[in-house]
Length: 117
Length: 114
Image 1 (spheres, rainbow over the protein chains, first blue to last red):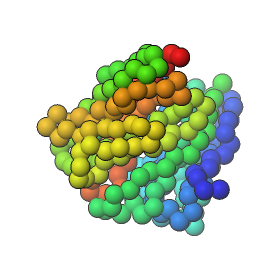
Image 2: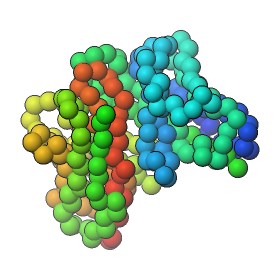
Image 3: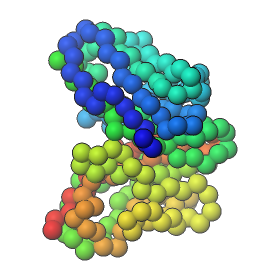
């Protein structure tokens, strides 16, 4: 497809379980971002990848959250020992270069709606 | 740190009314500015963006926004709204020296009454 895709679209899990969320960016986009959209906090940045490295992890809320990106393409966000406050929509975005001084737009995927019971 | 304020949380208008949604940002350097829209059940889509040049930018579906640097504002406007404009609108900024993370406002829910 032409856009950013994410899977699963919905995930229900029990408190304490681990979950993995997947993002497929637009083909050729080197920059990838994870955001979280929740009722209490709005849209928050989590982590940014340039290629396979993550120069900015400042938005990850705790060490239960981690992410990786392989082959400069697919990214996985992992939440360990999920808590109810992790319930949110997790959004992925990508942009072409992610390089300094470039005027770029981030394109968003449909998100994964996570519910922790 | 950057911050974005959207003062209108929920706006209700009749069709054909004019729209202006406020957005103010706080940042000491040069910024890029964006408006994203999220229609019911759909994902975030770019409405318009400002990087440099003419401070009045036009986007899709008849929307426009004006960057007023002295007021740190980037208000969204549309002269005549339609029922299909019912959606949530997010203002966002990032720093202009790299492809930085976006900082979003809390969003404005727009309801258009037919």
